Amino acid sequence: MTPAWVGPTVAIALVIIAASFLVIGGVVLAIGLSVKKQSAALRAQLAAFTLEARAVTTRVRSEIDGFAELSAEARGKLRGAIDAVDGRLQDLDALVEVLQEEAEETALDVAAFVRTARHAGGVLGTARRMMKRRRGADD
Image (tube, rainbow, N blue to C red; front, top):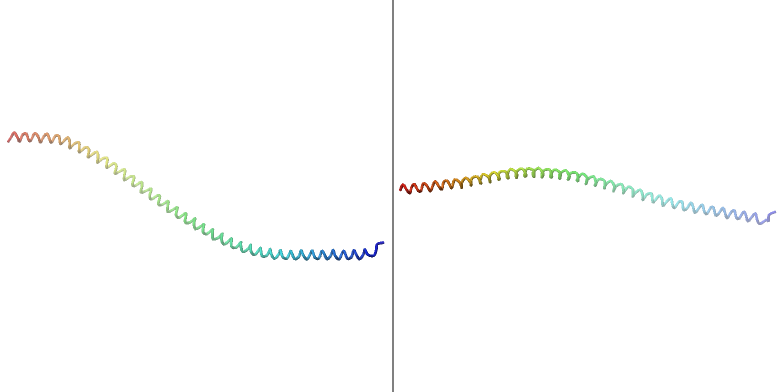
């Protein structure tokens, strides 16, 4: 037989254990509600951050597109300017070649003229001297 105090002691122990489980359940419920509130606040902040990040991303993307368009336009203008300068340099090179050929031909013509003038001067000088002698003899 079991003593009389065992039954009430087991009942009290069961009440204490049940109360402990109720306290533990209440604490877990309070922690769960607190976590739920914090997670809801965190979700709201995360949603706001996501919206701001999307707005910034959209703006950055539009700026990058603008810079890309500007860069393409500048490259096109630069390419046109380079082609124009190249064409003008080719024209200038052709002009210099023509001027050089003309200068060479002119130098050759002048040299030939000077040679002819020297030779002619010698012939003319001889002819002049002979004419002076004749005039002197005729006088």
